[in-house]
Amino acid sequence: MNFTDRIKPTDKGITTYLDELIAQNYQIPTFQREVVWEKENVKKLWDSIYKFYPLGSILIWKTDIQLQNHRQIGGHELSDNDLNRSEYKYILDGQQRTTSLLTSLYGGRIEGRGDFDPSIYVDLTIENKDNTDDESYRHRFLYWDEIDDKNGTIKRNTGRRKKFDQNLIIKLKDIKEDFEGQQGKIVNHPEVNQKYNHKYWKELRRIKQVLDNYRLSFIDLKGIMVSEVCQIFERINQAGEPLDIFDIVVAKTFRPENGESGGFYLRELIENFREKNNSRFLRISDFDYLQIIAILIRENIENSGIRNITPRYLNDIKTEQIESVWESAKRAILKTFDFFENTLYLKGPQFVPYRYFYLTLSNYFYKNSNPNYDFLKKYFWYYSFHNEDLLSNTRDINTHIRFLDLQKHNNEIHFDRFLIDKNVLRNLSYSSKGRLSRAILALFSNKKPKDWRYTDREVIGDNLFFSTDKPNLHHIFPVNFINSNVNNNLLDHNSLMNIAYLTQITNLEISDQNPLVYIREFDENPNFEKVIDNHLLPHDILQWARMEKMPIDALDQFIEKRIDKIISELQSQLKGINFEIIDTKEKVTNE
Image (cartoon, rainbow, N blue to C red; front, side, top):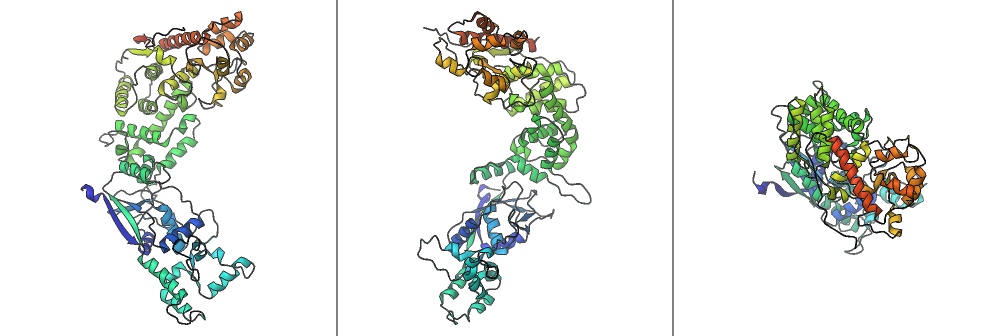
């Protein structure tokens, strides 16, 4: 197919389009957003049609791919389970307008509005004031609850009910389907009195001409892959909300229940998995789950066709492929989360430096009866802290999977030289969510830090706040203390080297106090010195507190000593690996 056939502008009569919709010739895929139906907006829509204003194009994706679709729209059955269609037509953009037009012409049900009838009625007695009249539509287009006077009990509707009884307010559907009959009803009205050019009669004809002649604009997309559809949808979607490839794969792999086979619904599959287990890691994104599944299919099903985890290949995932790996995949994913949570002591995804770890480790645990946790700990810390970014793209993922497979099958493995730059650690920011910042927070968490006041209480528990939430992260040298005291520090007090985890209550108690004051108070507890160690804090700050005096560059000295503590801890974690330390800091004096 050449490029000129990919995008084709067309048009179609408004009633023809709606009739074809009811005939199930168009589908609305489930990845479409929920309709926000408002009475006023529907009236404005019909006013634009009445004035022959453009509505904007409706985007139609023509494809041979069968997706899960909404079974109903506005109460009208649209589901089409015909598996023999050579082409499906999905509404990518225009669901809101389509729903509004369909329900206002043919009636239906609006979710959350009970017995409300969305059918539109037209008051033939309403005239335009001028060409820029933007108010008469409110009175021209009406709903039944604006007409029905409940046998005279709703006084504001009395006049409209009288006009309805006189056939001067007519249902839009009746004008479309019984125009001759509607003309016959008003021809003998005392004001009309068979006058062909009477304004009521002219208004009735105008509405019929609108229904017969107004044409909607369409843009047909054909020969376009699912991954491209995602990008197109995001760019034309007025709400600016991206369409996740997960939504399309869910729709594409959906299988309704029938007598021969059970149904399949990927979204429900993952939601059930989340609900039956208890871990914050289960809340990783749907896209993460989809990429995990893709890796497991690629690595464990021969000739799967899934050569990568980009949308181009995620689009090719088949229902039966997911079913083939899912039972073992669940166990592998849970083992991955268990490794993070109970081996590394990381209590949530916010500590994981690379989201791609979910993919590489799940594949390692997949049908692996004898995982090597000592190896996995080295693997995690090596790649989390290495000075080079070694797991940031799909090519890196493939390298990692090959490396992990070697150990999985008991082959000899070898880690290359590990490189770490002191200056990179020095400049890691408290507010950053980058890979190395997460790695530092993960290392702090891994040491199972205890609270400074209540030294038998672990800080990193199930009630942990998000890692960047200030009440749980404490500046050892508080920000306001540094800002309000004359000092000779060159390093940033927001460095992660100046951060420790504390319980919220202890953090609030410390507030902006001088560290000499609050450290000395905590030091009264005989266990406090050990607590300092499991926070990877240098003992210098403890000695300064005991002497009630600190050097004018105390923050700088503290940060440098803590970097040494962190590097020492990493050397212990990566024992046996060639470990190289560099420092790219420029020479700076305090003068």
